[in-house]
Image (cartoon, rainbow, N blue to C red; front, side, top):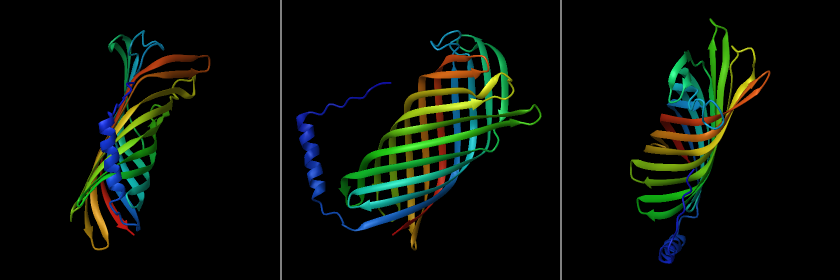
Length: 294
């Protein structure tokens, strides 16, 4: 994982300090404001991970690949804001109910996905997931109809995918969670029609496990994976005030990437160690938002 180092010259530091001094004395309203958002929408998630034959990434370099394709979920969320002068605090909760999706499982004998010998695909049954977020933002630039804010955010997400096929006796699952820490940058434009664009950069810790009941020698869980990677979330909101509330819509795209993690398979006789080569996850979401400010 690359480390990003930002070196500021003395002149740049003085300019930034001067901007903060101007903003500190700009005369923001002392009134506390609160806002609550209710949202519902649809998300489409894709997940692709593969493991090697051993923990050094060899024999073969891709032994098994599992693809979760077009996992469609209904989302329900609530978000709370507290705003004091140029500081804002927020907390949100989202419930995701998976409606449909497909899983493809392929195994290979040789490097670079050669010698495929096992092809399986199954439908995802109804599962659930939750998302929790807390964050703080501070305005670093305030104009008459525009504001730029930045601040840290802490996020937790978990998803559970039941894999059930009664005809063959399959009753298994795959689940994973992400613990994320990063910062969010947002730009808001205030008019009769309000716009907000935000981007969140995150360091993400992955924890995953699954169970495959068709193998009698597999324990529960049958395998575990973990890694530390990165994630990014881009979001666009538009809202319009109607009477005593605001009605809006939101589009978002989330992406996460993990490389060179660990993979463990647990059986009644042994624990097999391999490497999690690569895991990519992406989520597109469209939501309708009802907002009320106090």
